[in-house]
Image: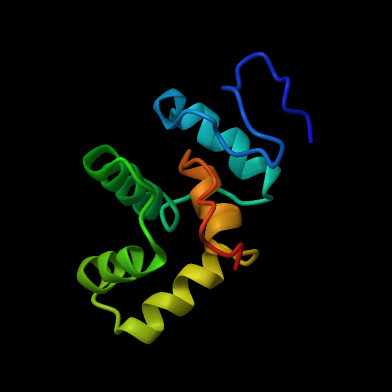
Length: 112
């Protein structure tokens, strides 16, 4: 993984941003491309929710908060909302959603 791209913010050895304040949509697009994700109308609402949550709380939202958002936003039941997250981010919420949303890697969470 090339973490020396001139337009990229500083990242850790796993590719997560060291400072979420440096995130922008161009960086999200680069991170998504590295994860082989296409940022589209299905992913942006989740990424935007995660960013808003981080701005308010200064921590990455746990997957249960994103599930709650999807239940309220899309009217899904909890089981379907959780399945949707893992459908959109097939290699895991922390590995892909947190990374693309510009979160620092949550150290206490699994990579699932």
